[in-house]
Length: 274
Image (cartoon, rainbow, N blue to C red):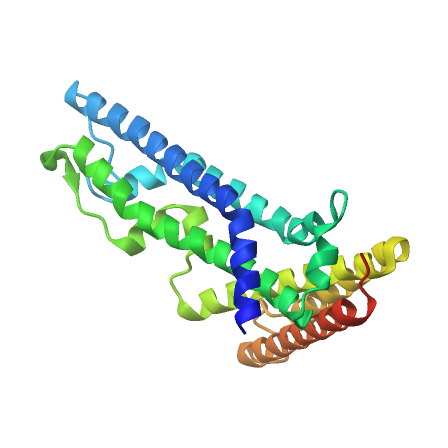
């Protein structure tokens, strides 16, 4: 367990500057967009412009600001998501880059090789939820900046749920339903597991491994998509009840997760080479 913790610490340290950079980008872009939009609107109202009703209210709200800066608020989130998606692969391949590959030293460590797999998975999840937590912490800061710009007589308070629903990126990243949150991020974890296994297939069999990785990833996607389409999850005339279809899809996801982890452990302990 101690060696696993050290491996997680190592992976986090290797990514820390990129993680801090994505956090900084998110805050800077969102605050800049907020100041630009809010300042312009306050100047317009002070110049005698008519207020534009927003959900029936004439006063400005932080929800209004978030809604009217959709693209700029979403841009750093999309960039961070793309960076993390790329790092799911780089977290493995960077160990094989350069002379005297670092992968050799990792594989020779006096610990079970599955700890390498689990440490990398844990690190990716820590990065994801760190960015999510940072976005949640950034919202009160941005709301405070909004309150400093807009005079009290021109603004109204906003509720957290309204702020989240005002931006499509927030609605996707922060579903208000607990079940939807678990299912959505659970699917994300499964995608990471499939990607890890695909990388290990390629590393184990090299040229042929590319084909094996593509076949495996395609099979995992089909295992989820085919039941989703054939069982009619979104149709009222489906033969099965929605809860039954949901149960089948959950079972498929669990099988894919178990297969990915089991195959990944086996490849890492018996097949992988440097």
